[in-house]
Every structure is written in structure tokens, then in C-alpha cells.
Image (cartoon, rainbow, N blue to C red; front, side, top):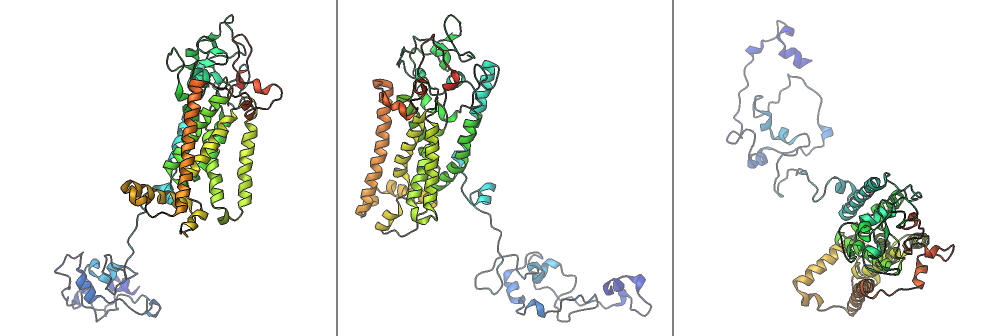
Length: 483
């Protein structure tokens, strides 16, 4: 109120001195005039500005009005606000510029930007599982394409004739036409003879029987699609089924496991190792099933790859057994997952070999790629706590050291180190040899295992005959030809 009355002529009394009669304050030149008015030199600030050492609670912070004047001031009221070091620093008395470490002025904290990451990385504080997200998007896009293709061929996006697909998805013939693992499309020698010489249902089949008399049969080239061939050789059907699924329920369960357990495992071991295990386990599962599962099964899904991920989780549990609060409970949960999946694989029309093969490959590659267990680390003199989050970085350092100087990398190693690396090399070699032998048997030798079928079916109600290739005039149920 005092300031308002002083500067408002209408409110002044006659006894008050006019504003124009007040003697002007003699302005002392600012010590900063030789610099830019908005950028005083640091030397001037150090010599003129002394921050208060008294606590703020001892200062009189009450408003004094316009009549209060500090006689100790060395500058006029018309000096720009930016020239006052106190005001430039703000209420916290922090200058807007950095000073060296010997200065008595408090140092401001500069704004920091987090390195290497977008919104989700800053929010979660973890790495983004790019491989899992990319594969999941591809699988969703491929499944939508399956539904569209089935609608084009049969008039419905899901199979409703002759029976309803319990997975809520396309017919098995549509999946065969789009790249499912189907042995007759991959080799000519079958249990019923030549696949080229036989007749097959068309991709748009909606009946439970097919025969030449009914006119609903096609050649193997028309059923398999993609390209015309004289001899079936579509070997890539060991790879493409990982990105296909038999229905909404099928892809829903797989994505649930993949986006939770798979994403966390990718963060733990890194994108390169996770991608190798995921793809190798998925392909190996389809190769094993191609050798021993019924030849009439149209097998699809990422179950084999996810069983490889479960194998990594099992190994990590054993490695960190003493560090976990309830390791027995964790083990029971993992074993329960394996048991449920294996029992479901015994149902008709499901390729359990894909599950078994993916699990075996995951164990082999896990032993080869994961960090050494803590028991071995202690024998090697490493007392650091086992942490899978840093294992990828540590192993990448080892790879770089090996590539830079192989001789120095192996020199001076502990005997236990050599034993463990021999075990790793043995499992990696075993995985590669198993791949080669199964592929040669599939394409060249065609040796069959009569009793192996009981790994994927129960000998009840003629379940083990489901999925076997039928003769052209027999009746078949298409809903039982997928996994």
C-alpha cells in the first residue's frame, strides 16, 4: 500500500514532496559495464558477490514498501535485473553458469538427459526386448493374413465346415497352403508312396471326404502353393511355421508366454543369444517332428521356440538356486509348465515332438551360451554375485578379447575354466550334429521309428493313427490335422 500511495500522484497529500522534486540517486557505474549487460564476467562475480552464510530464518523477509532504501547499495535502481548476480542466481543463490571446483559458490546441477533409451526404457529402467516385440508383431500379422486367406478360400475367416476348429482359426489346408510344416510338401518319399503321384484335398476344401469322383481333389503342387515343382523340396517349411498359428487360442497362449517370460529372458541374456536360442529351438522342434511325427500333421506355432526359452529359465534357476528365496517353489512351477504342455501334446493332432525338440535344443544352447554357474565362478576366483543381467556384457567382453588376441585370451587359465569350456563346446557340437543327422535322415535315409509315436499320442481310441496320411478314397477329419 505504501508503494502504491507513493507512486500514485492522485493519492499524495499536499505536504508530500512531488516526485519530480526528489533528488535523483547518483548512479555509480556498474562494475560489469565493460562486459555485455547480460553476461558478466566470472571474475567480477567472484570479487563482488559473497553469498550469505547466515540461515534464511534470521533474515527479515517482510515487505518494507517503496520508502525502504539500502544506503550500502553501489548501483542505481535502473540497473537491469540481469546485471545483479544475486538475481541471476535466483532464490537459491545459484549462478546460471559453472564455476571451477575452487570457488566458494554453490554449484548448480545441470539438467541431465538419460542416455540410450526412449520412453519405455526410461520408464521401466530396463532394456527393450526388440526381438520378442518384432517376432510377436510378425506372428500377429501372419495370423491375420491366415484368417483373410481362409475367408477368400472358404468364405469364412475360421473353419466351420465340416467341423468347427476348436482353436478358432483357419482350416489345416489353408495353413498348408500358407507354409505350415507338411511333410508331403517337403519330400517325395512317403509311407503311402510318392506325394506327387497321389491326390490331395484342395486348399478350399470344406468337406470331410475327398475323391476323384467328387471332384474335390488337387495335386500336391496346388495344395502346397508358392511355386510349381516336379519334386517336393520346400525345405523352408521348417522355419515358417514358427510364425504361424492354428487359431486365436493357440496364438493367445503363445504370445502370453512370449511377451512375459520371453521378454524378460531377452533382457537377461541379450538379444543375440536369445535370438539364437529362440530360432534354433523352434527349427529343431519342427525337424524332430518331421522325422517322427505323423506325416499328415500340418504343424504350426512357436511352441518349440518357447520350450527352448523355458529350458533357459530352468538352467537359470539351477544356477541361482542359493540366491533365490523359494527355489523349490520356482522349480515346481517350471516343472508344472513342462508337465502340462507335455500332456497336452499327447492329445490327437498335436505335434509333441516340437515341444520335446525345442526343450532339448534350449538346454544344449543354454549350457553353451549362459554364464558359468556361481559354483564354478568361485573355483575360478571370481567372488562376484551371479547376475544374468550383466552376463551378456561380460561375455561380450570375452568375445572381443578373443577376437583381438586369441592367444592372450587362453593363456593363464584355471583348469576348471578349461573343463567348463570343454563341456560348453561338447553341448554346442552335440546340437549341431543332431541338426545334421536329423536333416539327412529326413531328406535322404527316411528311417522311421515305430515306437517314437507314443511320445506324441496315447494308444487309446485309435489316437495314434490320427495324422497318418490317408488313401485318396478314405474319410479324414481336417480338424485333427493341425497342431
